[in-house]
Every structure is written in C-alpha cells, then in structure tokens.
Length: 354
Image 1 (cartoon, rainbow, N blue to C red):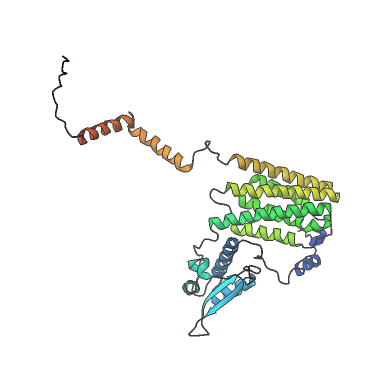
Image 2: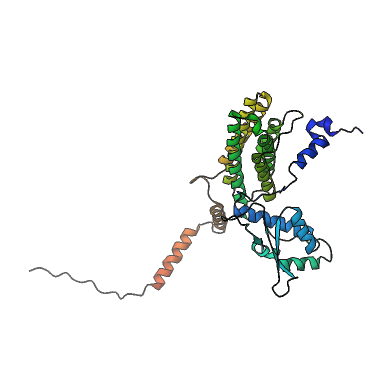
C-alpha cells in the first residue's frame, strides 16, 4: 500500500496550511448569511435547516443544539402562565434584518405546519428516544427555488464585474473569487443535470487552480459565491418548467468564465486562460441547447393541448365514420323535436290589378 501525504499531492493541502485557512474564518463563520438575500430564499433555507435538525435530533434539547451548531439564530418563547415552560421558538439567519436593522424572525409554524414545537414534540415522543422520522415537509417550494436560482444569477453577474475590474486594476485581488467560482460550476452542473455544465466544471478546474504553494486569501466576493453554491446545493434539482431559470443562470456563468479568462490573461497565465475560455465555450453550447428547447409561440403545443389531441385521436377509433355526422344528426333531431308544429296554411292568391 502506497500512502501520499497532503504536501505531496499539493503544497496547499498540508495540514498546517489547511488549519490556517480554516482558522482564518472560524470567528463568526456561518454557512448561510442572510444579508442581501431575498426573504423567500431565507425562509426556504430556514425551513430546510430546521427540518434537517428535527429529523436528526432525538429530543428538544438536541434539536436546539443542532440549530445553534448550524449557526442559526434561535429565540425561544416562554409561557405567560409558567415562565419556565417553552411553548415555541423562532429562527433567523445572521444578517437577515428589516429596514430598521432589527432581525426578522420566523416561527416554526410560519415555516411549515409540521415544524411547530408541539408537533415536533409529538414526533420525538413517537420515536421512543431515537431520531425523529423523516417528515413530508417540502424543503423548498417552487417559487423559493426559482428565487434561489435568480439570486445565484445575480451573484454570478456581480462576481464577473468584480473580476473584470480586478483584471484591469489589481489581478491578485480576484484570485479567491476565481477559485470559488469552481464550486458554483460543479454544484450547478449537479443541480441542472446538464452534461455540458459538467464538461465546463471539469475544464474550469485548471483555470481556478491557484499558483503552487499559494492559497488566495478569502474575499467577500469569493465567500458570496461559496454561499451561492451552498444555496444551490441545498435547493436541489430544478423541477418543472424551469428552463428559463436555468438559461438565466448559465448565461451569467458564461460571463463569469469569460471574466476569469480575462483575469488569467492579464496575469500572464496562458494555460489557465485557455482553460477558462474552454469552459466558456462549453457553457455557451449549454445555453444554446437550452434555448432551443424552449417552446416558442405557434411552434410547440402545450402539454394540455397534446393530451386533448391524444384523447380525441383515441375516441376517433370508436367511431370510424367520424363524430361529425352523428353530432349533426343528433342536433337535427333535437332541433326538430324542440320546434313546435306549425299549421299549414293555403297559399294566398295574388289580387289582380284592375
């Protein structure tokens, strides 16, 4: 058996350098920051994190402990008659505040009916000391998932603008954002299940690679891309008719990869610039393919129309002569029965002029 140390694989994978990177963000580190994030995204994220904590906890104490370990802010509500009895709870993410700067809290019942404290206690009591069973609470609704992908497209556009600015002013200041973009590409490829996106992520790995032995310092733009990747991973795969949302995200990722190519070209890294351009080409192919699948007006019938046409086609097999003669005959009979009989009057003679 042959063993490989972290330093033999890459100089930035030694344990001291990894510890230095981890400790650099240990203080106040939060997986999800609620600042500059739409309220729908925060609500869906909190619902998912609370559901996961409830499923893996065996009791109330373990539930609140798991939420605090995930850096979720928790506020418990006590009974008015018994100050020592906890009757409810509220959660929020750090940085998610209102216009006046106060945190915006979400009660368990506001997230989902199954996440109220009495309902959770019932589940834990049925578990007989074991972890609570998996609930049927949906993690993200369709509008919340769409809002996540819309937010991800905005963050990719902002990162591309930052990279272009740094390429002209300070190329070293965008190294962390270029590195973090790889996480966004890989997560988006898994969520969208697009083979071209997988090729893009593989091609981009070389463009995102830092110089040997040099780990870029964390930056706000890089952390924002990492949080975006975590949100996409938490939301899961796109479901339903969300082709336009996928196109919007991939179009911004094309601009992001092109900005990284400009950055690497300004740094004098020809191989990394070529890898970024190859990733942008794969992304452009993915966008073109996705746009060709979007139905245009007058070209593709809707699913409901196709189902109606299929039903009519099957019904025609039962009436080889067609439905029109039968319907016309029935209509004639109904009209003749409903029409009252009229008395036949003799023809009137025309008077001769004198």
